[in-house]
Image (cartoon, rainbow, N blue to C red; front, side, top):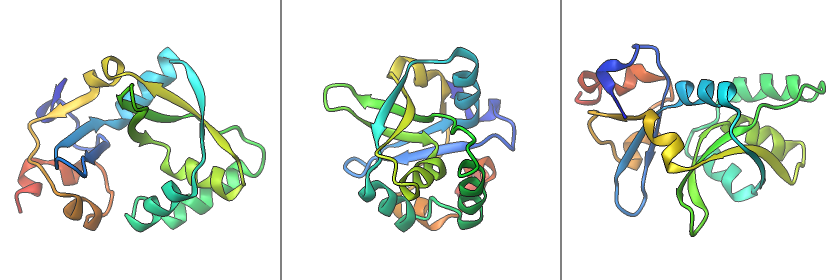
Length: 159
């Protein structure tokens, strides 16, 4: 596990707020992505679901300009990098999509039934978990634009 003070101010964070418990899970998402590119963990196909796409759009997780740029690239035949899905409960196959929300929406727009994903066990993603950050609510998380770690600094979250 990493402490937030070990991160570069421009490191990208992914924050998940458990809807039932309110517990936060902060991950150094770009570091996790780079680890996946280096170690090449297993890739599986996961279904592309309209309800997930709708929730990403509703929650503000999708930037229209980035979506359009990626859509233009991938419709030219460039293969998509696998998304990263971190398992939180192996029994129920539940988890959190830490990287690849825009690629997932592109797959949906292109009418793909599935998308390639690194599905990581807790043991694989836990070293990238970030501690020491104040908790945020789902409402606060959705209302803030996704601009990287700058919003994650304790001095910024406390405002």
